[in-house]
Amino acid sequence: AMIVTDSADLDMVVRAVLFGAVGTAGQRCTSLRRLIVHKKQKEALLKSLQKAYKSIRVGNPLDKKTLVGPLIDAHAFNAMYEAIKEAKSAGGKLLVGGERVKTKGGYYVAPAIIEMHAQTEIVRHETFAPILYVLTYDKMAEAIALNNDVPQGLSSCIFTRDVREAELFLSSV
Image (cartoon, rainbow, N blue to C red):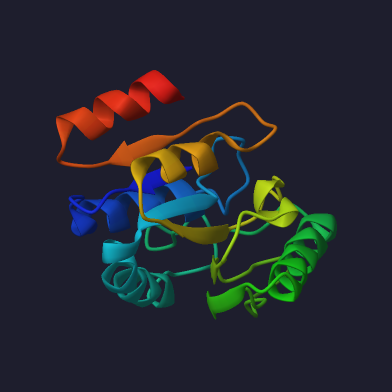
């Protein structure tokens, strides 16, 4: 998870999200899958992220211009498709991505961003696909509670310019 505070540098956040959420097509245990954004930053950040996601090159991972390679197999593709379907049925809004990308062989997909109103079971589940769930918060205690409310061990971070917020985050995870 990544917490984005109201003081965060959004340019840095966008670069970190691209690396963390889509760099390995979301197929590692430490992939970023939950973005917990302060309400004041949500609109601007989602606009920047959607633009960045639409520019991502999906294809042969041996090509230096490619950011996202294939999912490992049909099972992974189907899991991603089902996760998106479940998120939408839980009230999530697919903002970008999620579709299969036509290429020779393999299971290539466009990384997805899904805005969620709550942290549902599908958000807590590790799909191992390039799906980024976006949640919002108003108070830091809410963000930390969302961050910690998953059954897996955590790999998480905070983007803030406020040292006190960073210290609170570090003492709470």
